[in-house]
Image 1 (cartoon, rainbow, N blue to C red):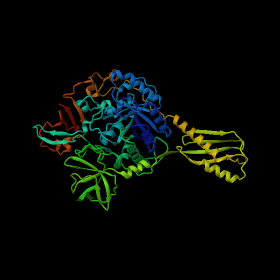
Image 2: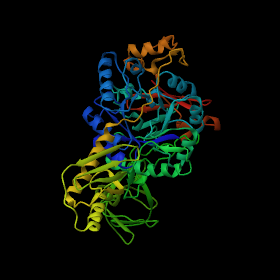
Image 3: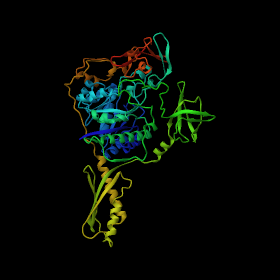
Image 4: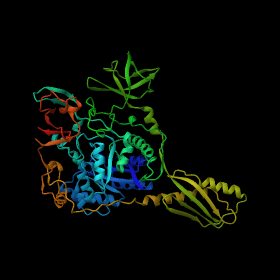
Amino acid sequence: MKYVELLAPAKDLATARAAIDSGADAVYMGGPSLGARATATNSLDDVRKAAEYAHLFGARLYMTLNTIVYEHELTEARNIAQAAIDAGVDALIVQDTAYLRMGLVGAELHASTQMHNATPEGVAFLGRAGFSRVVLERGLTGEEMRAICKATDAEIEVFVHGAICVCSSGRCYMSRSQGHRSGNRGECSQPCRQTYDLVDGGGKIIRKGAHLLSVRDMDMSAHIGELLDMGVVSLKIEGRLKDEAYVRNITAHYSRLLDKALATRPHIKRGSQGHSAIDFTPSPAKTFTRNGGDYVFGGRRSGLATFDTPKAMGEPIGKVNNIGRGWFVLDRKVELHAGDGICYTHEGKLYGTNINTAEEGRIRPNRMECLTVGTQVFRNHDKAFHDALATTRTRRSLPLWLTLSGTTEGITLTAHDEDGNKVESTLTQSFDTATKPDTALANIQSALSKSGTSPFDVVDVKIELKGDVPFLPTSVLNGLRRDVQERMEQERMAQRPAKNIATEDKSVAYPIRHLRGDHNVVNSLAREFYTDHGVEYIDEGYDLQPDLTDVEVMRTPYCIRREIGHCLLKGSSLREPLTLRHGDDEYRLRFDCKACMMHVIKR
């Protein structure tokens, strides 16, 4: 049997629990520091509590330590990593190979996407060098992913939803090129979401003040079965800075898709247990989204960017068909409510407002600035949907079987679950004989069948009493039931899923002999690791260099030329070289048409 998981993000303990309740088989969250989302940190105590809650359902908890580690931080990094493992974390997601040389005990290490895992050779090496799992680069085609899966025995994890780093992950130094904030240190200033002028070799402005590097979000809803068939074991949702509503909605959506895909694949099973009762209809369009697609999964293409705005537009609800004083009508029927948020663009500028009323097709918003007939309108806040999310309770439950045995001189309630765990609670006191045995037995059955506020659903109650039927007050039965449920909960929370701890094969050679600055080797342990695996020259990491002038700060499968209809392979009149300009920052663009990659060089 092969096991797969739906992996959800969590910015804090409450969101981690919500993700598990909504159907996640695993959750990843930040620890006290050294994560790629510097503002999404958690205490080790909260990490421990999240791990315990995950383990209750046989799910897993991963902690992100996915930044590069400076020399003076090595001791701190090791202490945090070992403390997290001791607290119950099932795996650490890391970028820096230094963690392989820290002597961590019981550490399952996952190679973060920040390691730019994009080739069969590179991923195969990581699988033999001590990583049990490799998280793939987001800018890969389906064929490239398939080739990687065939090349390694390491587990493969891929992103299926959320924001995309337009740059090859872990190879972006654009934020550092504009100031001290580094994406490899969890402090990215998101320069890819800024506006730029596109200037040709003659100084002509081709595009002015557009979000030329801002790409749409990822939504792989249509490809879950394909990913499973190619061997992917973990389907990852992006969003450690997203709110709980987003995590609940997107997790529930992909949980349903995964269950549907597994229904026709009996050889694959989910890695956790329990049933999530979702009492709302999940929809990716209802929470934060930049109108996602499958990025380059189906091949390099245009239509990936959102030049007008980097913000979440939400779901398209129609175009303006008629307009009057303080109102407008759309070209289609759609149920809208007072308090809904809508937005639209006009001449490259984003406008947003709220709806006051929506009656008989006439929509009256707070403002209608620059709204004209033909304007495409989006709903970026569905009040009814968010109200439903806020008021509904998503519950995840586990099946439990109970057996009551004993006599009038004492009784024992035994509970067991589907994983073979068994607990019991005993009362040695004497009980009166029931004057109405049938009524007493029915009362026992009813009281023990309740689940209360526990995470269990009692699916069967067996009564195996000997001799006279004792009269058992409802309070006694409820107390016994609660006791075994609490004991079972503690039993399950104390358990830890099996780890897949890989060992380092020092005989395997790294595919590259010369590591340039973009590999970002910044400490002695990482340098030792690569040297032991045959690397002969290691340049100083870019994050240690004060000046990145003339350095390639971004590499991406997204191509501005292709996006604006000037692909070099199809012919273009634009004069080279093309330049991106933002204030005092300028970047020269170089196009590798053979590899279909765009390179961005700081000028």
